[in-house]
Image 1 (tube, helix red, strand yellow):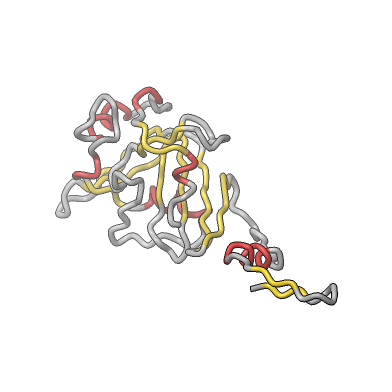
Image 2 (image 1 turned 90 degrees about the horizontal axis):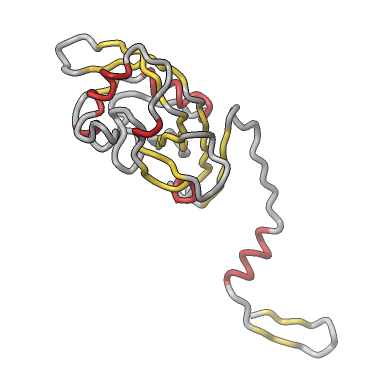
Length: 195
């Protein structure tokens, strides 16, 4: 209830919780602080700050562990551009592929063509500890060991059952075949992750 005594006549009216929230929000000062290079978006929600970081298409070194009793294989593979959605508190990040750096909410993001990423886009961290600094997450993702298995399904148009077949064809190449990407979410959906 809002009571207005300003005019000498007391007026009372009901206010909504949303009106109260808006009035209080006007008093908040927010700053992003220093954003990592190539930050795509920043969002502050009740669950914390989320930052999306872009990495240009490039050749990455991937360490593939096919069995636990065998040393991992090192592969040099071209990858498309990648968007990493970093959540607060060292939670597992999300990663999506993109044909170009996202510029609009309705743009398509694609399944990251690697192991260790669930169908939702969330990274399976295993025993790998990701840094709290969002700017370091992409490199940490490729420093981890990739484990061959079910997370390799649905990542390639040509090889829907196992991304390793795609990887075999990518060895020695310098560019990722963008027509092979599998659609996953729109940018606006990715921006809501972690809410």
